[in-house]
Image 1 (cartoon, rainbow, N blue to C red):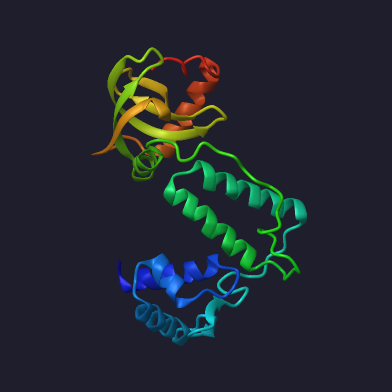
Image 2 (cartoon, one colour):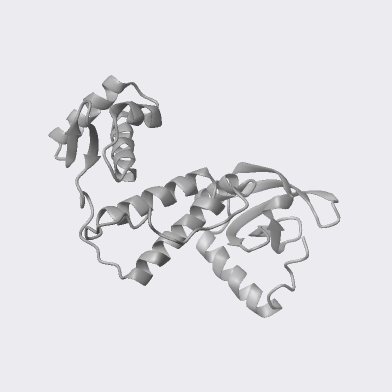
Length: 232
């Protein structure tokens, strides 16, 4: 990890904690030595970061650092907390970490309240845990690269496909990938829990993903929802 990336991660770690956190805990989270934490905190303070604390006491970011003041009403705050908690339970590791970081950023710039809005929130999300292959599929979508799949259909029959992943639907029973299938020469849907193996190819999509997404939506409307979802 570069030094600039490490400094950013340190800021993110401080933002996640609502109260002062020790250098030992920060070192454990970041995988560095306590001496490195002290040195990086000093560097950040020199560069203007609003870090408060001292060795033996702990460190924290002053409220409002980096983001402008934000006001959310109770329903808006509940929606943010519930939505990001849902992502933290249903996303892959990177998405879950992003949800936690995003929530910490938002809460850090809210007006002060007597109670911690996260700790006292009564909204919780149950989940099945991280969907299989989600991180790999998201990478292929983000980089607009083809995805090689080993897939088992509803009857359990194996099949090998090369697809262009364009969207993921998160449903109550399963997560479903919408993709252009080179074998079927059309848009198809694949349940993530039926993917046996997923590998990101070096080959890029022949079209940009936003264009494919628009084509898929048009195809979905023409065929009727669900008409081609059961055919792989």
